[in-house]
Length: 364
Length: 255
Image 1 (cartoon, rainbow over the protein chains, first blue to last red):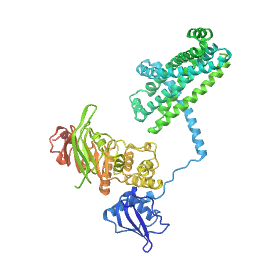
Image 2: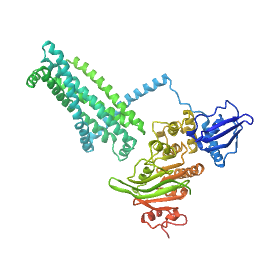
Image 3: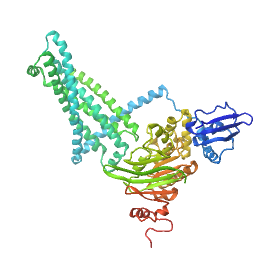
Image 4: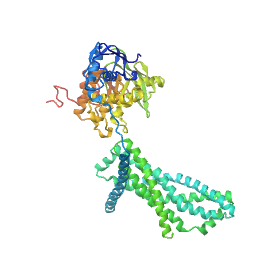
């Protein structure tokens, strides 16, 4: 394949083209340095497609205002190709410039996005309350089957990962506490520390993070894809409310599942701790449980479990809202899923801090 | 009728335990505008996907431009892919890119031209398929269905292929846009010397722009020829198919 060539002939002001003029055989356009082209000579052109024709014309007349050069000794089909392309040259001549954004514009845009999220969430909560009122009035509209399916997906499916994670975290905590406490001969106090850490902080927060990543992302991706494929519109046209059909079952399923998951996490974490204290500190299971009965307040357990429904509501609301605010393209499904996880994690951390301050002030 | 651009010989495939093609053979000559028709589930789309190298047939051979699709090296296949363009049923535009970049993507990937030039060539293609200049900067989601099809056609044409595959090009378009799209395909086929292979349900397309129709039935080619020739084939599905549209000078119900 002979590459495309074009030479400028000074005597006649002619551009002499030869070779194969196709998009993949042209490296760079010939630089004519502003010399006017009156004639394009195509006797040597062996192949010409629309890309080649456009490039040849663009080389001969860099500006749309330049006069159309005379086309000389082209083969008839090449001439036809040039004539097909020529009328469109005016539209394509100006080089498209990608728009650039300044710092100020970026900052403004970012602020609007954050404000949009906040406003959207408040708006969404309002709509959801209205929907709940309607559901209270017409109990027949509750979606029990959907609720069951969601509980199975959110709760049953999450048990292995929650138990596994918390067991390992229990192992790590007990091991680190044990290695310190052993030096002071205070091994038995490892049980106190472990129970406090796992039940009060670690289990609720880690379970919330897991649920945000696992269930929150899944909810957004699922509802978002339903939005893209117009399933949400179909639900609306059937006279159903997407909030009642999709959102409320998910919110309630998470609300019910999270405290249970936290409790399962508590048990797994304590079991992990027991396994380590037995091996490392020679505290038998019996001694461990005796100590647990002595020092464990019901309060400690409840503080952890009580945080769960609050985390659950925020994760579910954020995930459902982001799912419903997907626009009709696949990019926004990805962007909104990411946003769900980020927003949920931020919400969990902030809520947990508020809880910590609140419990201290209340003396719990 | 010179060399065969598409040559499918004795292809068989079963999907999910159900035989879809049983020894199917067909060939398409350069410059032809061919329509593939057949009832729902007759394997039209599967055949298209086999020819463009997305689904591997269990037996038989498929050649494009005389080169086997399923026995070529990745490099040969890449060269072959540049010689044909595909318009998918729903356009399959990349939703994260602007319209212009969608069309320019094949040029970015397969040529050494500067990106600015690629975008200009993309605009040329958009102008050739009849889109207004201001569409170039938009996102595919901001366009109507008919405009999306045109963008997809522009992308299929980006590298000036010799062969164009169209999967139901007029589905989802209103009759006026559909006819305009048909006319555009025929115009481009004639002016660019394209071979066009399209899968369709649209009778109006068949009657207006098609050189030859291939009918798929029961996993084989039932017949091929012009619309007039096909009317002589005695097949219940075909009879019903053509009865769905009154031809000039006939009435459906009769008096």
